[in-house]
Length: 248
Image (cartoon, rainbow, N blue to C red; front, side, top):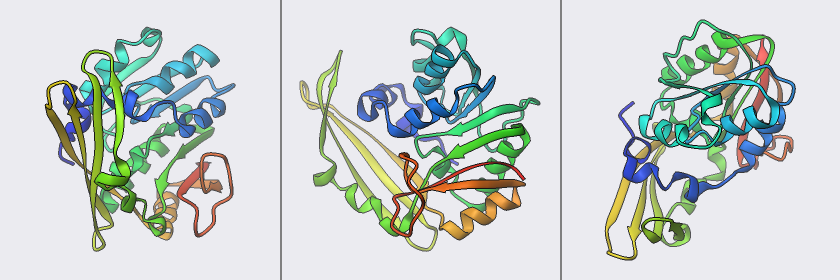
């Protein structure tokens, strides 16, 4: 996968926390971490969840992300010294350790664009999951076509940056049905001087059957499919495919 400027460029990564906030997936995974001794956070981003798991549950947390700019932001946060930070790709990560819980939040799984990428990422989960351990991640349901809301009008929002001041943000997206990949643009305009910053990202929307098959082929078993981060059961119209499972 090509480097994603949205996360790799410090000028763009700085907006991540203010543009996303504390989300339902992180809250669910924080609760799931209770009583777990060793936790692996794959695609940890700016580290908010990893730090909270350590501070609230006292677990030993290893947080992994391929973007050095995101990890720089994570390491600068209070409590970051209690987390082990690793710059690595989820497809090739090999720590030689096993964990009681492996989480992948923020739709990080969808950055695995091809069936081969997803197989490699799931193999990494299987290799690092302890017997009796749990894994969880999220992938958007393509039937909901969420990318249709990622247009300049509907997605327009405002961010208050402590240094730059007000920043206008918006998205745009294009769906490729053949590959199941959405290419989307994220734009930021600093209102004080009109400066424009932006990056292009790609994420995959695998169908449920393909996702379930890949999980099984990796030697993993799903105990429960959820349709959103409230824990609601999966239905055809659910916004998310969220497998909560373990080693087969």
